[in-house]
Image (tube, rainbow, N blue to C red):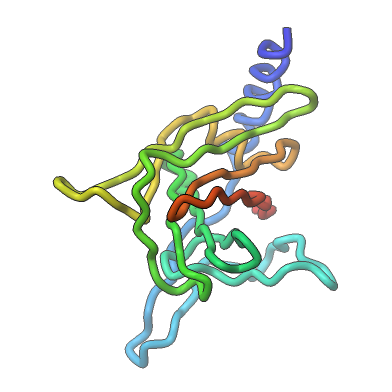
Length: 172
C-alpha cells in the first residue's frame, strides 16, 4: 500500500514539474575568465531568505552539497527537459573533480513514511577505474528529487570513508 501512495504522489507531482520549471542553462565563462550566470534568477526566488544558504554553484553549474564538514562536496544538477540527474564528486573547495572508485552512489528518497533507494551509476571513460561523474535518467527519481515534498539524501564512499549529504530543494 505504501508503494501505491508513493506512486500516486509521484504522478501528482509529475504534472506540475512537466508544465513549469526553471531554465537549466549552465554557468558560462566570459572572455575575462569570470563566471557568467545565465540561470535567470531575476523574477523568481530560490527560497533562501535571511539566514538561508548561499546559492553558490559548482564548477559544472550545479547545486552544492557539503560532505564531511566540507572535506568534500557533491555537485548535483538537473536537466528538466531530458529528466537527467548528474552528480559530480568535488574537493573541499568545491572547485575540482575528485575521481572515486565506486560503481554508483545511492539516493534515498523519503515521502511520508515510505523510503526508497535509487542507485545512480558511475559514468566512466572506457578503461578507467575511477570517475567523479554519476548520472541517471530514472524518471521516478528525477520527479522525487526535484519535488519539495520529498526528502532526499545521497550516500557515497570516498577513499573507504562513507559520506552522506542532504539534497536541498531549490524552488524553481
